[in-house]
Image (cartoon, rainbow, N blue to C red; front, side, top):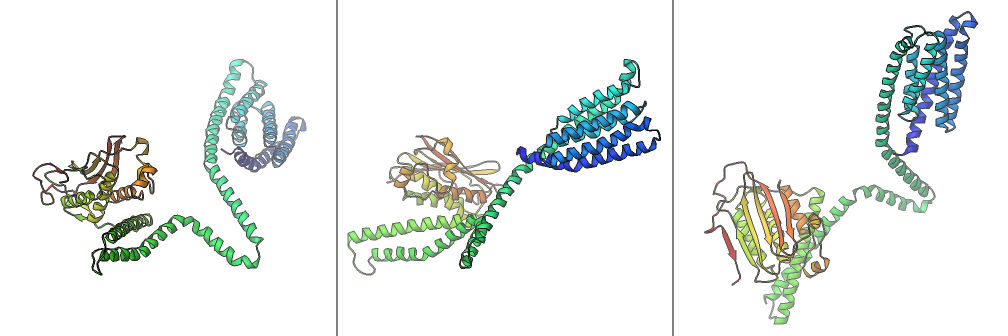
Length: 468
């Protein structure tokens, strides 16, 4: 908590309440003094009037001079004396004068610290005891008369303490906002002062800077729109390059040598990779802009999985890596966007192929009570547990050296997670270093009885594809 800010609020409260309390005290004692025609019996009322005015004035002045503690103590001490005089000279059994100390107890908690109310209560109890003792004889009689005010004043001190703590907590809550607003205000004042020193020739520049300041709040949206536009602008020329390279490589415009075919093949392959990167960037831009839409329907999940497994074969670094299918006899019914679900599945399989140099990659499909899971398991290098969430961050690849040897942008996994979450599912990771990783897609089942209409049973639950 900013102590200076808290003290400032307490001082503001005291500045308002001290004149009010002092004025009420002076008015009340003045009326009592006027009611006593004999000065000998009412002199203490006149003294109380003077003390209330002087104590309130000096306390208020000390607050204005930033001497908060002095002003509060002076005000409280003077009014404790006034109430003591009233008890000492005017108390009778059943009198409400001792309960006037509750005002000072509450004020002490508000003006200084929450526990100062108990200090004021202690002083009030002592003064009450002395004052009432002047009128009664015997310890029991004294205890009987001071018990009520003492208990009531103590309860008020406790209530004031907790109320002050609650107020202090509220101050703590707004203090950070106050400082932040003050900082923002100072920044704006600095900008305004800087702008005021510029001349008319820089007026257009100042307008651009102001516009840039306003649009800085939407920086992420601007970046998203930029990526969206660039992806669209580059798609046409890259398509043209890829198609021309393919046509030339087929010899449709004349004979080409083996060397030329190799070069054209590399151009075509690089072009398709660039298109893949652009597609990822475009998908990411649409996701960030909230423009991403799904067309969910019942689809042939077996066909989607088979097409993804067939596509990943060409991505394997080692042709001896086995592709294993572990499918259910009855396929689950799930509403998915076929294109986007296959994209997510292919991203996971492609990622497994990129980091698996030996062993196998397994696509395991399981149906549960309310969900279905699609697990992509590999025997690759594995991922440390502390990086399980890092791999789902945009443009992040854990092993930069290895990543440079394996083509990729670091967008596949983030996009896949977003796609699955848009389907109402989850994408999780489990892995062990040196033993491989498992990425598991979990999707909710369609709320209907399972049917074999959407499923296809293979001749066995587990099928393995090995290169010929």
